[in-house]
Amino acid sequence: MTLLEVKGVTKRFGGLTAVDDVSFEIAEGKILGLVGPNGAGKTTLFNCISGLYRVNSGMIVFGGRDITNKPAHIVCRAGIGRTFQIVQNFERMTLTENIMVGAFLRSRGKKQAAEKGLEILEFIQLQEKKDVKARNLSPPEKRRLGLGMALATEPRLLMLDEVMAGLTPVEIDGVLDLLWKIQETGVSIIVIEHVMRAVMAISEKIIVLDSGKKISEGPPEEIAHDDRVIRAYLGKSYAGS
Figure 1 (cartoon, one colour):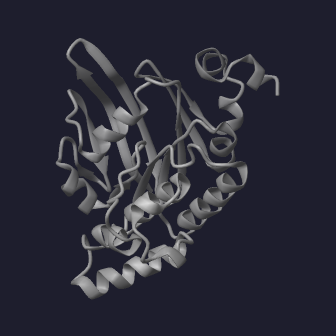
Figure 2: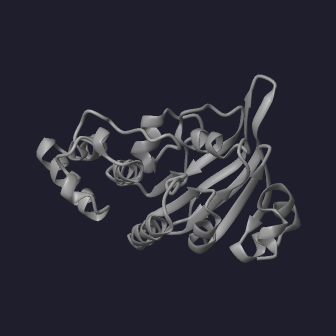
């Protein structure tokens, strides 16, 4: 069953078209990769879906409901959670308190939000630092915390913006394991990522953007050998590997 439909979405900033007539869909419980060179429009597209930006044209349908240009808090309540390319933690708050911020969306009070916070911290394997302030975390831990904050809103769709950036290969494998566990709960995932090994491993379908346009869409093995994608993003060395 289709969960999210993006239909001909266009976003312009003055004379610059950052997202140009992009359409795609994702079904429930699936993982979709979104890749492309820097400036391709990936994060802008996320911002349009999540309600941070208003689109100039097109439609966004989530769970059969038109959420086009709905404010971010309405989109989040509808069931879309996200992380940010630049980590957005509350630096002076503890990890538990950070997770509680997201948990309050569906919790009946502080106690329930705190319980949810501890549950999420265990799931993302940061429970031992539950009372540590976010400013004292390493960059990889801050990214994992951001993922936990999004999970705390109990999303049906989770959008991840470079959650594996700057991680070691071992850390990347740990995040991949975590994402598969999230998928097993029925949550759909869209992941923006430049670590192609990770994208190819986890995505059932990949969409490629270049200069705001969708230039290719398909399973990983097709994307890896698409001449348009090789020229715009992957490079000949990747195709030959």
